[in-house]
Length: 333
Figure 1: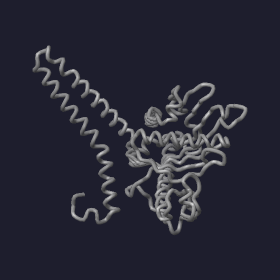
Figure 2: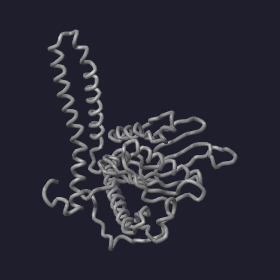
Figure 3: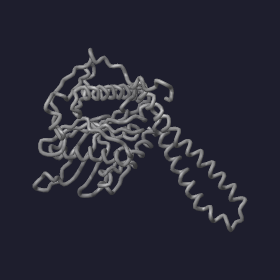
């Protein structure tokens, strides 16, 4: 990276910077763990040379080192569970309201907010690429890009149907309603994982005027892009930017991510069939998590069995327990 002319080819340079970032994501916690272990050994040797009455002063430093080692071991154990090449990638999170009318649209918006809050807690950047508002409230669908190391690895278990049970704020009779929304998580794959797509032959491009929140400055021209991959029927769209060129570039990246995911799912199903096992649940499949706000209050994952009695904290982005439980569960399958 320090070589002359490194930045002359911006695309190649950015790819190399991204490669370095991914390598450091693995090497940094390893290096810190080794350093903490060395410091601990030095502290123990120092304690052996000190009179017993003076060793008390080292307890604070010992406790700090122990916490550092435990934290770094936990980080490395989690990374070991995220060993697939795509796990380190950023993630596209697509949310689609299901059955339940206005309640479902509101539920889809609640899920969008939940993932945005989770990303904020992690220090990840987010970009709303596409959003279609509901007729009365909420959203019909949205696509969120979450940028950060291992964002996809953490979130891949969120794919599937999420169910909400509550007293509907849109029902004048105050009745209990059940709403559904589907979540689809795909990796924002880099050049080293990207698959070849013939955009001239296999992809139909449609342009349209953007709508929804923030649309006042983007919907004056047909800058929104919709791409349809003809061989598979996969459709993606982007309306976030004023520039048609930027929307096209973003949509193409989304399409590549979707097709990569399809290929991975195909391989997974074939491997599961050979084992005589059931493949993982996909977008629009069985319910993966229930969020109950009435009469009880809890969130329960249908795969891992993990349950918490504080649904509001989960909806505010406290997802890590569920994400880690899924990773543990998936390794046992």
